[in-house]
Length: 346
Ligand SMILES: NC(=O)c1ccc[n+]([C@@H]2O[C@H](COP(=O)([O-])OP(=O)(O)OC[C@H]3O[C@@H](n4cnc5c(N)ncnc54)[C@H](O)[C@@H]3O)[C@@H](O)[C@H]2O)c1
Ligand SMILES: O=C(O)C[C@H](O)C(=O)O
Image (cartoon, rainbow, N blue to C red; front, side, top):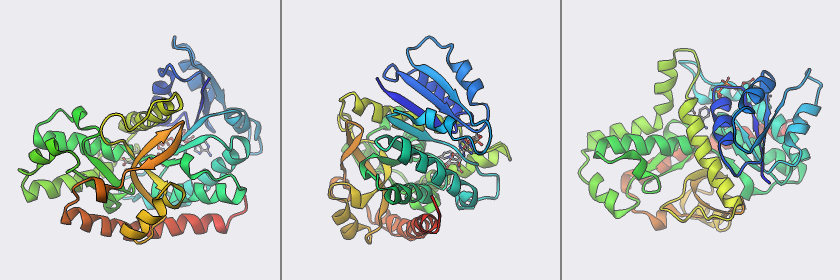
């Protein structure tokens, strides 16, 4: 019996992500929470002939806490795409003022109602919202770093797609054969392409100009969608796919499968001092930064280990420089998120 809760389930990401979760046979209960239209989306999905029982939870007013508690009670996994998306001209950091308090309050509810649940954070700016979640859980005395995941899978999905186009390989075959680390915003995103020898041999022929274009497109792929949607939001469908890919990995691990079985596992933005060997890894390679996206191996829904890119992949000089740049941006966002909770009442 596995219960999954989606917070922000009626949104652009929330709806298709909930659809994909409804199709997963491992899910027995799917609780949809949103401040609008959660019941409508739940009624719609509930007609699909798969085993998951779908429930909709929507507060009657600002003071109503029963909806969120019902959505979270007994849940194993919470996925959070709640909050506002970007409009053209905005950076993800511009979303902080609105989304920081949404994440703080949702995660406080999770900490109080479902402290053992795995938490997957999609809401931007991920580089800061995940530190917010960690700090809230620490304050409540229920932080399990092995169960807090910043969802950066869309960066991997994009890297696979764009590199596939460049080296003329079916992009779906690149899953597990390249990796993306760092954070989830502009130059904090660092694609690593010399992960397996077969791909390395192909990327050796890419020109410098094409490689630079590839890196830029992975780092700023989100802007492409924001611009094309022209005020109607940011990536939703590709994000639902990516969020589901990551959530399905966590669900598989809850069912006993290891994520390390096929190639390099997906990365997630995690609290390094809380995962085995993470503190030493960060001190040695990352200036001691607390949060960084690395490929993770899961067991029973918990991070069992991570793959150190510097030891297990052929990192080029250029990629090392990209990591250095990423660290500057990450440190600022982590501090912003952490300080926000320190100055907040839960
Ligand atoms: N991690 C990533 O790779 C990634 C990719 C795409 C988008 N995002 C982010 O995901 C977030 C959602 O994007 P979207 O396009 O789905 O936005 P959206 O506006 O379409 O949907 C957001 C939903 O959140 C709901 N919501 C707002 N406050 C809430 C609260 N307190 N509790 C529960 N639900 C609440 C809204 O009612 C809405 O239904 C944005 O912050 C966006 O930047 C992240
Ligand atoms: O670009 C955005 O604001 C949404 C998301 O983070 C993305 O990468 O598409």
